[in-house]
Amino acid sequence: MPVNIPTILRSGVRLPLLGLGTWKSKPNEVATAVKVAIGAGYRHIDTAWNYGNEAEVGQGVRDAIRDGAVERRELFIVTKLWCTFHRPEDVKLGIADSLDKLGLDYVDMYLMHGPQGFKGPKIRPTSDSDYDDTDYVDTWQAMESLVDEGLTRSLGVSNFNSRQVDRVLQACRIKPIVNQVELHPYLPQLDLIKYCQSKDIILTAYSPFGSTPEIGNEPRLLEDPVVVTIGKRHGKTPAQVLLRYHLERGLSVLAKSITPARILQNLEVFDFRLTEDDIRSMNSLNRNHRYVTWQYYFTKPYNIGEWVSIMKPKSKPNEVATAVKVAIGGGYRHIDAAWLYGNEAEVGQGVREAIRDGTVERRELFIVTKLWSTFHRPEDVKLGIADSLDKLGLDYVDMYLMHGPPGFKRITCEPQGPKIRPTSDSDYDDTDYVDTWKAMESLVDEGLTRSLGVSNFNSRQVDRVLQACRIKPVVNQVELHPYLPQLDLIKYCQSKDIILTAYSPFGSTPEVGNEPRLLEDPVVVTIGKRHGKTPAQVLLRYHLERGLSVLAKSITPARILQNLEVFDFRLTEDDIRSLNSLNRNHRYVTWQYSRTHKYYPFDDQPRSAQ
Image 1 (tube, one colour):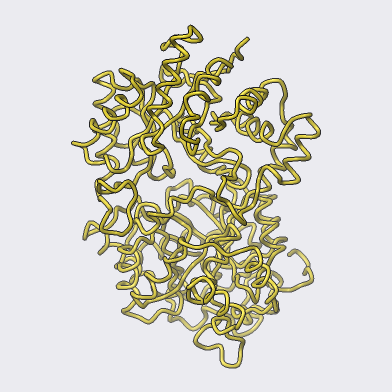
Image 2: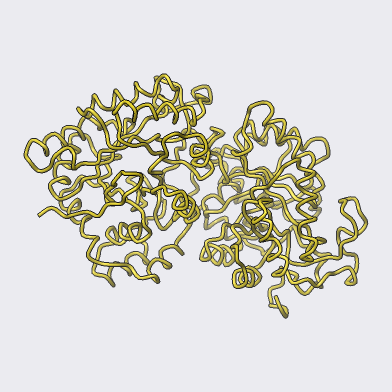
């Protein structure tokens, strides 16, 4: 007896919550797998032009219909527009080729496989010259005509972040029903889920088991002790636990298998429930780890996102605007500034020039600045962001960070003023940073920032904010490198679903004097030689491997671009262990001028009211 799989209704479209994924299925086995799956109860079948198996999927569907296992109207067939068909005039060619291979008159949903466009005939780009700069919004508008013509019943997207979905929503006539993305406990994407659910868009999870056949030294989610233990408690396999994890969160999920026994086993997920503790335990596994990286287009501007970012403290005047413009042209979208750095005006100039030149739109950028410690009193918080926005020439920033927990007395609004940093204890201000945080929350309400975070906070200080906040910090930006790996802080923040952003990833600064020079450390240099990478690239990759975002500071165009070349290699577990073993608990950025402040963050022992 076929299993009756629950469905979810959106905009008149009824999507079965559990689907059969066919990505990376072996040739000559897909048709049988599809037929077996339909016989067992699957009705949602997912394929794509890029998978190269639409003909086999279609054969399996036709065989099942011919045998009386199902009628076409009972099925929900999904395929995807590949990136070489992004030009509006090519969109219909893309679906026509897919329908021809599938042997169908229509599909139930047609997804844009990703926001990037590529030039044909190569399926994947091998250099930047293979990119096509068609705006995915124009592609979407061409896809809408496919619904009008009856070639698809509905539309969706895949591998889109929230800002990209938002652009489509602002311009569309027909709303996307689905965003199909990689989702699993190592990449739970809680913010994306919250966003899509707020827009009544279904998230469909692909790669729910995390691992793929080529993972090598990558973490194996199916063997994770937390997942295995939960499975044993419920009398279920790790795979069944991972599928149920998504269903509990209100998502649809694709279970890829070509083995009949596994196909049937994957259906046995509707006879148990995970507890809230189970869900919390699985969410706590978050590493921000992607198995599906689309590595072949990581230099494409649309998708650099928040992984590697440009940071501009201590950059020379008159060089920052150029550096920002070069970085945006190279693909950076996360630009990090601060009131303290004294260069917000130049950062804003670089941003405006890049927008004016058509390199980027404001909505594609992720601009971060910071509230300096002289604006900690609640009544001064809005003055701080207002001054920053004025210098940046922006109406809002994407994230506003509290630069540090200690407060200082406010003497002036100009970075050249005499009392930006205290020279004695009498310059301290004792405002509780929790009160500062509560005042910052109103900035989100007023639209002056899209999100909030902290910087230079220890775990106890983050915890105090979490206990009192209405709006949770998204990020904690701290000094991180192999001489200061901060493993406990990483573990704590990841357990709270807070992203750690690494500043000073190269450790040394121009003023280090006799301090250790991380870029010259023999361990770092040796690892770089083994991978054919510079020490700087190794240090950036080190943070990415740990599920962190990282700020790469440079004003040299060649270095800015070189710092992006970190997505085409992986560090081994031995590499990570070797780098972690360099730990000296050594800080280059000490905030020494606030050493006696009661909220000084870098003491090993707690202070009162920390």
